[in-house]
Amino acid sequence: MKKDDINSIKTLLESPKAIAIIPHKNPDGDAIGSCLGLYHYLKLYGHNAKVIAPNDYPDFLKWMPEEASILKYDSQVEESNDFITKANIIFTLDFNGLSRIGDMQDVVASAKAIKIMIDHHQQPDDYATYKYSDVSMSSTCEMVYNFIEMLDDVNAIDRTIATCLYTGIMTDTGSFRFPSTTSATHRIIGYLIEKGANNSEIHNNIYDTNSFDRLQLLGQALCNLKVIPEYRTAYITLSQEELNKFNYKKGGTEGFVNYGLSLEGIIFAAIFIENHQENIIKISLRSKGDFSVNELSRAHFNGGGHTNAAGGKSDLNMSDTIDKFISILPQYNEDLKA
Image (cartoon, rainbow, N blue to C red; front, side):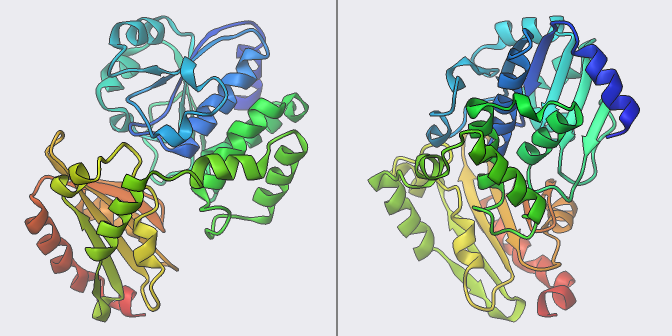
């Protein structure tokens, strides 16, 4: 972010403002962690800040400090619209195109508030007054830490802020194993622990509490796992019937796609999840090395993300979606066989 932009934002934040903080639809650990981390930071200085999520999110994120204060737009439309319309500033975190916030898109686009984007995804749209966009960053939570540092205020980070930011960095780096995890990431994590983030407790809250139904659903997903060895590709399918059978809850398939990617010789993995309510097949894509699932998803599945992690959707049924997926693999023959 340019020095002039930081100075302008510092001036904006010198007096209390009404500030909306918005993550993407179906927010994950990085989205909620970055929003709550920024929320707690702004509250230190008397700002009237509110996190407004487009919809609900997994239960394993609901232990986070003051999570209960988050408005869910799909069930609190009037209150959310009122705050967004009157806000002086809108922070958009962990997404870079207003289409990613679903039904909130129009009210945010038309809001008179100054918009500030903090995000690490590729190909950002041009809707924000101030934009901090860096695809090399491990997570938006790491960027929020950097943003606070740019404001010359890292000493203000307390245990609560540190807990939120640690959570998002941990989840978006796959517990610090993804290539975007740098020495700078580890230095930031060390600082957050010094400030009071309890790393083992956070890990347990996110990863170590499984329901019997979720483990059964994982078993079903692994039974459905298919491998296409000539393209070093693996994929998983889960039908709506299978989700219902094991009492699926939002976020219940988090991480399932990584089992395909963990297979020896596999560099590209996908999971296809049927969603009758939205009448789509939800798609998550993962890769190793230089194979860009972001480019593939943008080209074929109305999605995008990062080089090694992206999402998308299909309006076809499951069978036709899988046929389409398999049919496009020859287009990436050289990259997948390299």
